[in-house]
Length: 218
View 1 (tube, helix red, strand yellow):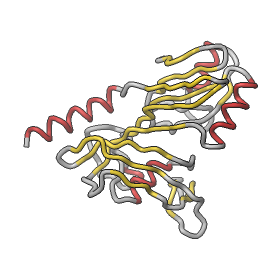
View 2 (cartoon, rainbow, N blue to C red):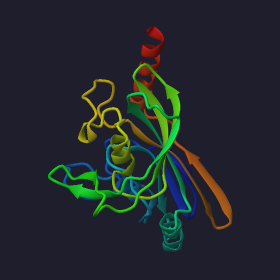
View 3 (cartoon, one colour):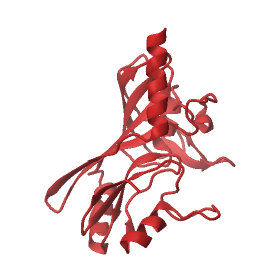
View 4 (cartoon, rainbow, N blue to C red):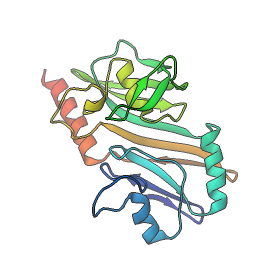
């Protein structure tokens, strides 16, 4: 397990893709990341979550007091979360903010959908970091915490995440999951500034390398 930080109050890990953050659902013979970490480091409290398919920075509290404080920081949007993602297509913008209201758990696939009537307010800032032949590396900064928010907003803008067939991306062999990585997490806790960054996992890095090679091969 890639531990990014460990002290008496905080445990921060670089979550691998394909592993559930917390218990729930049915997956025979495999414990969630939370269960694995708790078995090794003792009692933990869940502060936030990442989708099973998403990799990157994930924070747990090690005391009840830390959990209360950190949960309030997330609730009041005092935590800066930045994701790196590979988007299909070439956006005409360098930076934009998606403001589509979102409604989660729709239909048998449990997708999050844009719903102007019953959706909850949501905002995600997107910024292009690199352009390739038919894709971009973008940074996404969600200002709210809706289920599948970055994935749904990217699709709503017309540029779904590479590998995210649930949200309209074409089937690809470049990566076997949505190319979404929780790159960084920043916040103030007990009078101290914390900033954590998670290196890309192999599948994301390999897809990125392929796109760069493809760009310069043309």
